[in-house]
Amino acid sequence: MTDTNKAHSRISPQGQAMGKNATRLAALGLQRLRAQGLANVQAPMLRSEMCKTCACQPNTVPNGCLQTQMDFLKAATEGRPFLCHAPKDGRMCAGWVRARAELVANPLPPEALKLIEKWDYSPPDEEQAA
Image (cartoon, rainbow, N blue to C red; front, side, top):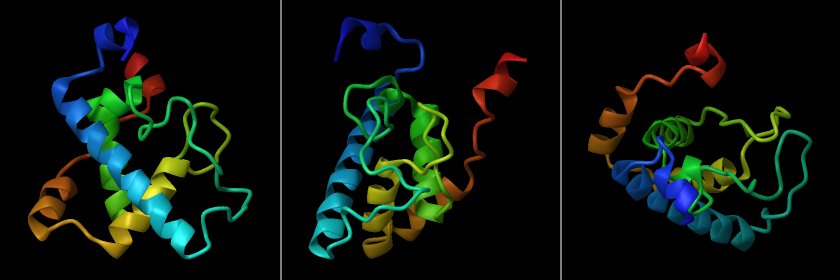
């Protein structure tokens, strides 16, 4: 991790721990998609590769941000699309697609799902700044 990321106000130890799990879920999901011959499916609404700032990309601010990680995990477990934020082009996050594939095959325990269900999605950054 770069010094810039270490000092970023959104990074926390809890976010980093969840980010490691998001990275792992995405890697497992990619293996699963490859095994099914679905890793290279092209669709206009899907990003084929993870962005440089993906929530599943190790050592990035979104990967260490608790708020982003909670939103990401909630979206992946509930099957709600998680859209890329960089660039904002309306396509679904490649990390989300991969993590979702793994979570469909291996759902989280009911206790974890109950905790995730209680999380309210964060407002967009534009609304927070207003």
